[in-house]
Length: 198
Image (cartoon, rainbow, N blue to C red; front, side, top):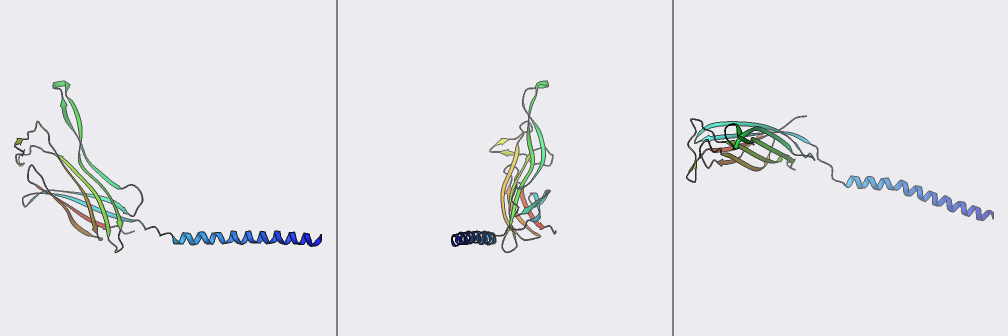
């Protein structure tokens, strides 16, 4: 009887020791698995300047700069900038019964970036700019496919571009060149990237 009790106690002690050893071994296995996961990239703050330059021949007629702060390698929403006006456009009626709708006119920028292995930055920008043709005295008469455009018929010029650039710190690049189909003016988009020091 005594031998049987000793045998049972020995078996229980062996099972308990095995469970403890197994439990102590599991965290080491989890730690090794965590070490195998790729490390997350550090977030780098970038100042991105976008400049819209409009030329009439060789003469620069406008220069519109915008600055957007972009965090490279950040998981989350893209950086965004909205600047413009809501312009009333008459849709119907006359006299006191005029009815209007509003158009958003201006500049929209959306951007994101990732750091490349060689230390540069892959920048993705969505650029949108809109404006209404006016009746400035120095503006050329506009005609499109033989149809004259008057002040009574507002015309909205829209420019959209998806820009994908790889830039190093403090680099400036001319990213896009586009020609206005009505006036022949040339729109150039210049992008400058600067890394913000912590």
